[in-house]
Length: 384
Ligand code: ACO
Image (tube, rainbow, N blue to C red):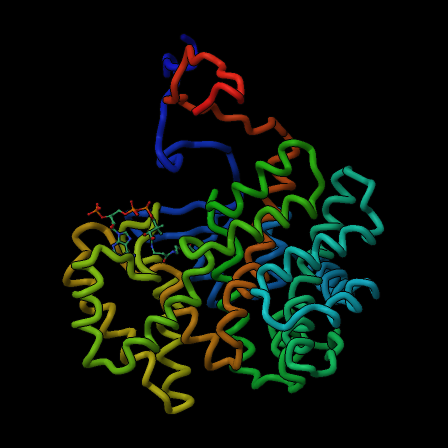
């Protein structure tokens, strides 16, 4: 009965602690709360780098020199426009789907017109990666404008990735300090080891399917509330709590009912996520700048109660806990928080696809069958 045995095989629910790939892109020290991109601490990148430079680092392995950076940014900023048919399609969609579904749909649509669609060599894969990274913000912003019945704001090649997205959403050039904070938030989300969506991208790419298909798989995976979808739900929770004085009772009840508190806990971090630490700082800064501490005061109280109650289990704020408050002050609507996550993480997805497929092996794990065996086939007419 070979399908009943796990001989020579190990089973780990949710692949916990299973090493499924070797990568030189990013690494996490879950005990110390450290994240590095290509060896450089995320804190240093948040402080000194930016989206273009950190994306180059992740995709190509080294920080770019001046010429390489200019070249890369010119390619990236010049690839933001969408094929005309995709633009027309975005105009004709119903206003109520979740924007993550629109990202999947529009990216799959754009793939049909990609000039490299039939090429699978490394250079073509890089060109496709750059186009996808450049186009996801345009898709998100255009859809958001279309669902409000507003004209599209064409990308502005003079603006960097972060500022251009905020500009395409609102039609106004953002305050430079706010655009810089958004840029930092994007840098913090660029990559994170073999998380669920990156793994999805790799599973698809490992079959030698194309870059667009891999990224569409990843977007579908990021959508879920246990992954990228948590940031939206954190804001729902803070709004539901309503006032800092109500946080204690709300959290204690939720823990009693064994409900998960969104924005807390992580498979790898057993201390505060270093990205949450930085985002917390900016959430406080923006709350003070805009003189509105309602959400941050509730969030700080939630963190205090969670620290007292569950930090002994290694549950601390993750990247999603404070990001929503930052995005709210930047004028980004709540249902775009997960697409914004995708706009950053697509860099990691594409970097991992490029790396993994260089020494590809198809992912094909086994399942431990625990169903019945030796059952007799009963013809339809004899079944009860
Ligand atoms: N709130 C309360 N308790 C929690 C939380 C939480 N957010 N997260 C974990 N726990 C508890 C569990 O109830 C469990 O307790 P028990 O051992 O007493 O039963 C223990 O911690 C282990 O939890 P698991 O769910 O087994 O941990 P796992 O590693 O499978 O899950 C996950 C990690 C999915 C992130 C989980 O912590 C969670 O659901 N968090 C809320 C959703 C969230 O914020 N997701 C974003 C993650 S970061 C990202 O993807 C960008």
